[in-house]
Amino acid sequence: MKFPYTFLLVLLTSISIMVSCKDDDSDDAINDPTADNKKALGTSAEDILTSDFYNSLTIEFVYSLGFEPEEETKASVIQFLNERVNKPGGITVKETFINPPQGAPFDTNEIKEIEDENRTAYNEDDNLAIFVFFSNGNSSNDTDTTVTLGTAYRNTSIVIYKKTLQDLIANNQGSDLATLEITTLQHEFGHILSLVNITDDDIHPTDHEDLDNNRHCVVQDCLMYFEATSARRRDIAQFFQNRSTVPSLDLLCLEDLQAKGGK
Image (tube, rainbow, N blue to C red; front, side):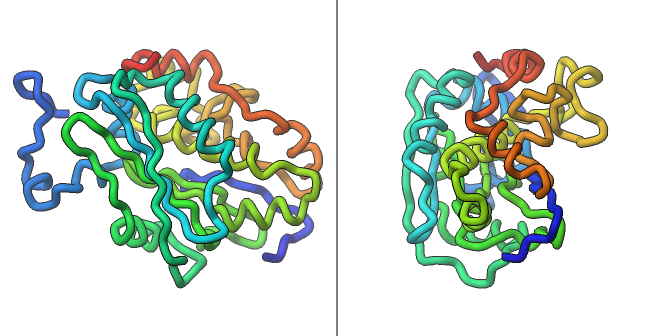
């Protein structure tokens, strides 16, 4: 990958209820049993945060050889979610190894096709499933000035552009791949949980959402701040120095998650 003199790392983000039972009898669910996992971003936030309909959670990591998640990432995502969601049945990680998809760089529609061909864990009974693909290729959204690290693109779907993370680290020796990967994944999980104001139901919409960078937090030290995973090339050393640890969610984000039933 060629990097210009300056570049910006951009992390794109590119119930109905009847008689206390979730309505699974919609036409979509009848025609496609996986339809509940193919809805708009943020629409499953309460299902993930609460135990009202789903008592447990499965995170499916899908990857090809050389692009598997870091060991620290697996442990951190469970800890991150356990601190926020109510899942008395527990959170488990499932790993699915696949042949490397061809045709990179990938656009979002191609990522969806990869998911549809390789995803094995879907919502079933009282278990909710989330898909995370660690991509062997870069994003087609990358430009001469920007690269994409990850995208939350459906209600239970995330792609992490592992190839891009590896390229970035290779060009900045001394930086930590695990910290960058964990920050990216947790940030995208924040979007899955509808941060910030993705479904227009936050309790602090005016004070919380950065209107210049929609769907991101106004608090600079927050995990959901738009620059939590962004930097200019001339500031790249400072970028990694500032991210020697993974940022936390600020009070506004935590209050919005709690209002949706989270911890």
